[in-house]
Length: 180
Image (cartoon, rainbow, N blue to C red; front, side, top):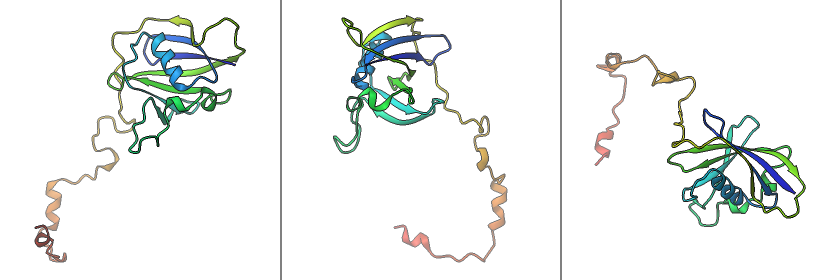
């Protein structure tokens, strides 16, 4: 079977590629097809992220094993597409180049029979030109906006700490002596 994906650049303009790839190919094969179809040179690190139906990021699947114990972490090459994506689980996030943070929304659009004489992976359709730079990501929490303390603000300042001066109800355990 052939998986047909729409790969959309997370940008203000509509920039996407439709890619056909065999279901037994790996996430690494899809990674190669994506960076080739968008014109990257493939020299940067990348990861896929599983996600839910509303694109909320879940588990990372890296290109290279970055774990503390070699071989312990599974990489893109360990995952055939059919083990991650199917008709019920159609979405995955792809991030290329962790400095620029090129982010793509990858969605399985169709599962079809393989066509004789076609070489896969194949870019079926290309729409839009890649911008010179990735859009700048904002990692600001929704409910903290301009308040750097957010919900943790206790409304105490230096003057409020004077309430402890002269209070002999605290026992001195002599911790200063133990910090040699």
